[in-house]
Amino acid sequence: MRIAFALMMFLAPALAGAQSRDAYFGDADLDRDGKLSLAEFQEWMSYAFRQMDANRDNVLAPEEQHVPNAKTLTLAELNARQAEQFRRQDKNRDGFLSQQEFLAPPG
Image (cartoon, rainbow, N blue to C red; front, side, top):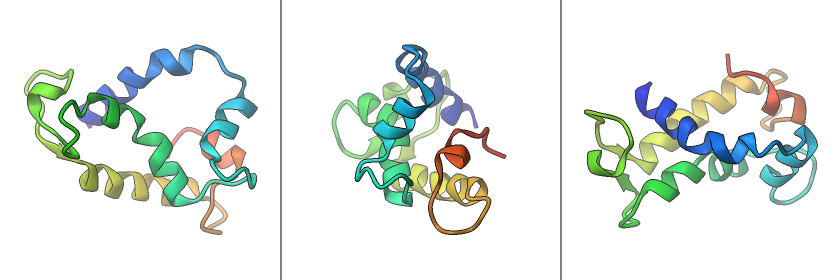
């Protein structure tokens, strides 16, 4: 949980740049079809991980993270967590996130 919080805190300044909700969703919607697939969601939500992964080995070692006593986190582990979050946010269970589902707080 602390790692996810740290990743979001790392990403927060970019989000605070206050793009509109439409623009934020549009940036995540890589194929511009008006909905997010799991792959698009993971790509967008992994931004902070990729920025912190200094040696580009798809592993965040404790020294690459901005959290004291952080545990190693692999991109595969992060993607699994993101897939679960995606499923929770996909309220209509269609396998995609609408803008409303994407922008809703994860539950």
